[in-house]
Image (cartoon, rainbow, N blue to C red; front, side):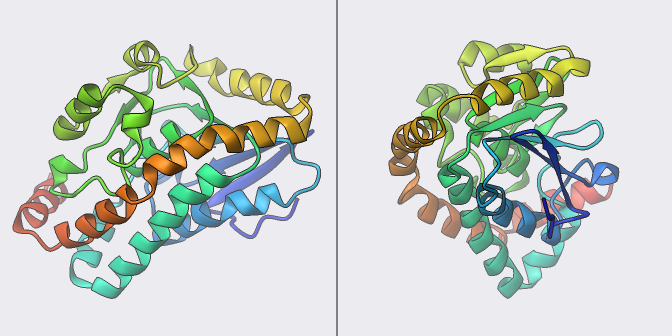
Length: 256
């Protein structure tokens, strides 16, 4: 199929399965403005493919995604209009992934951090490398977890555990993620993508109308949980970019 998102996102065909790969391996698939825009739009693009029945979502290289780009954070701390555009787009990223009619299997091949972690957990089914981990460090860098776990994590785990990992930014290992019920499978790193593809092909053989309408029905629970919370959380995140604590955290990170 055509791919207007290259080189930031790769789209490969494997029969009825589409493999969508974040393609900034040199930056651990951290989100540049163009990658961020691509991830907001790609779900509708693959859903419009009449031959597609399932999607595998992964990252190139050794990471799923390192999340936000700290250099970009420094830019949008000063440029409020670009910040507004990016956070409006962040809303689209979350909602379009929830509303994508095709089942999306996350192949979490390496660390999934910040927005990368949010995208991983928003996938319908998740296959995780035993060497990978999840982490949402928004609070640790002085930001509200608006496009992070605050709107969605309480639907994926207990509220006290969601609070613990959001408040501390601690890593969630693959083993712990499996115990929490966040992920479906944990595999050796070399078989993560293959396992996700096997699962995607199994779903691709299911009756599509029944599968897609069932996904929509189940995701109504998630959408109702997100509505309202997402608006508040993104507005709070917008303002947290102006705080001294965020500026100091970014400066410490970039001076390493």
